[in-house]
Image (cartoon, rainbow, N blue to C red; front, side, top):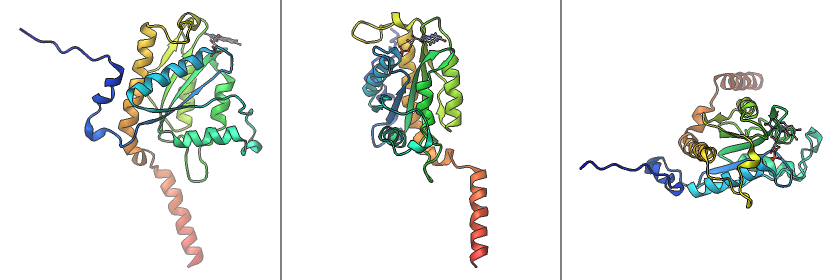
Length: 233
Ligand SMILES: Cc1cc2nc3c(=O)[nH]c(=O)nc-3n(C[C@H](O)[C@H](O)[C@H](O)COP(=O)(O)O)c2cc1C
């Protein structure tokens, strides 16, 4: 009799699908950003649900609370919340961005958080080479405006945005009273996205230096070094 192997759908077994040689020496570090301060916010609920799922895979997860983060203006660089956000970005190996769609775009609160993360802090780049997954919640029918624009933002921040993404329509009908995401094809998609983020972070992280090494930057550095040497010789 032919025996069939059932595909696994146990969240904690995702880690076991990574081969021993590819497994990192520490739990993968994922930072989650969400885009609403509203009490009962669905994008925050989705962020919390995602954190649970990522932890069940074996990831280390931090969620930034945007309450108290000022509107971007460069002379507030020393602000405590700004420093906290930048430290979390530096700590992370991958990120999940989760915004509501407002007027066909990511929320201003969401964009403001990214505006506070510079491309480089001296020689260190807090987002370059990190993996990124994007999700959005919609009050209306399913659309992809916020995730599409977050992809553009991810490119700008020099991140590796994974192909899969999630967009939850009529989001008010998708959560239980207690705040958990209801079982549905939308929830399955959320798990798919997080599984891909988790695996891609593990696979790309050891190669991040190679993947972020740039010809133009090396050339510019070479030119500065040669000019310094010739002026001081
Ligand atoms: C000003 C405003 C604009 C909105 N624009 C859209 C929109 O373009 N598309 C959509 O699907 N929902 C839209 N919504 C609905 C929100 O996406 C929905 O209420 C969502 O749950 C808000 O996010 P939150 O629950 O995280 O606060 C809009 C809501 C507001 C208040």
